[in-house]
Amino acid sequence: MKKILVLISALCVTASGLLFVASAQNDMTPEERAAMAVDQRKALFKTLRFNLIPIASMAQGAPFDAAVAERNARRVAAIASMIPEVLAQDTRDFDAETTALDSIWENMDDFTAKSQALEDNANAFADAASGGDFATAMGAFRAFGGSCGNCHDTYRVDTD
Image (cartoon, rainbow, N blue to C red; front, side, top):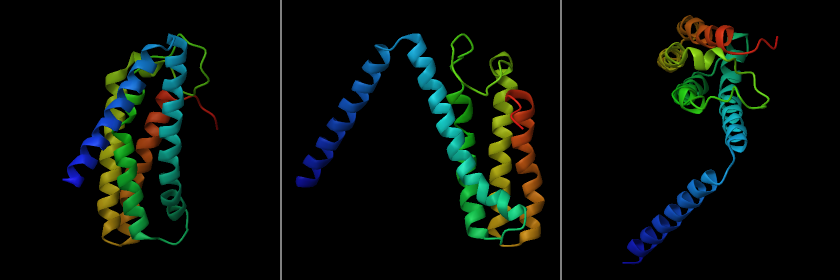
């Protein structure tokens, strides 16, 4: 009985929190919503980068750790599935500091396809890494890393 009461209480707290967030977003100006969207995108890509750096380091000569490579690649795949969603809000008309190019919203179908390719290639790399063979994993890494570059070349301000 106590477990049921705890569960019901937790559900009520969660529901009230979601309602608060939803009502807070309704009270926001379009500029505030755009700024929040850009902040969310930046956070997602920082998390993606956090998981990609150890894999890229292994590709550049750091000791190969198959478990880390697989785990992080699976995380990148999960993050990649969220990219189109966090970029769904067109923020071109707002003064927001971003490296996202206007071409994202002009070519959303292609952008989504590139995100899907990143997800697919990250999972393929994770599958290859799970076997523990460095050469096999690095063979899959080329397509995985290329997925990042293909999207950056078209949809991100060149910061290099």
